[in-house]
Length: 116
Ligand code: HEM
Image (cartoon, rainbow, N blue to C red; front, side, top):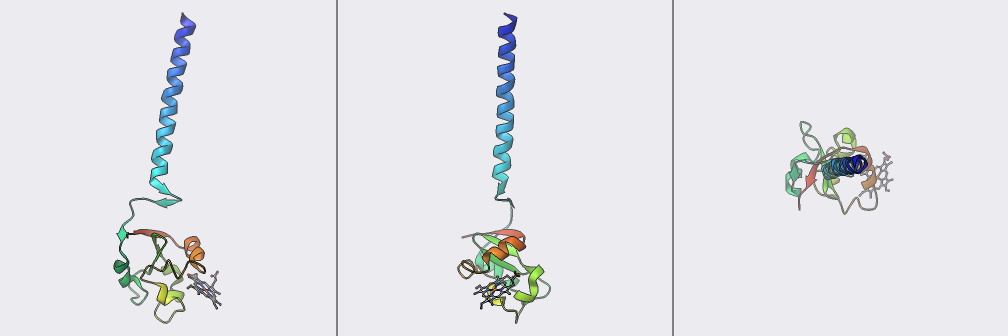
């Protein structure tokens, strides 16, 4: 009788532990999209225009594949007159599809979600 009770208690314990681990994993996964924090501000493409590298007081943003990257760290490329100024302050997903996109994703932080 006691062994049956012990087995039931162990089974219950395993179930509770499983639910706890499972829900922690589920919640953690929902909060991360491949390493990107959630609850970021949403930007429409037009919202990015003021962040095109023409104003030294503002950060520089590029929209790429659904996210907004802060490329201020590489401002020499993106300020007015820089080789890639035309990519800043807008959704440049198409332009960066073949070249440059992976550098942006690797080097710069995501600061927002690019709203459709
Ligand atoms: C003749 C063609 C091109 C040459 C010689 C060239 C050269 C370079 C060089 C030397 C870098 C720096 C590499 C590094 O930091 O690892 C770079 C970075 C980059 N290139 Fe190009 N590139 C060319 C075409 C393009 C095109 C067509 C695009 C996109 C439309 C592009 C987008 C970028 C971007 C976004 C970066 C990252 C800049 C940063 O670090 O913030 N490139 N390119």
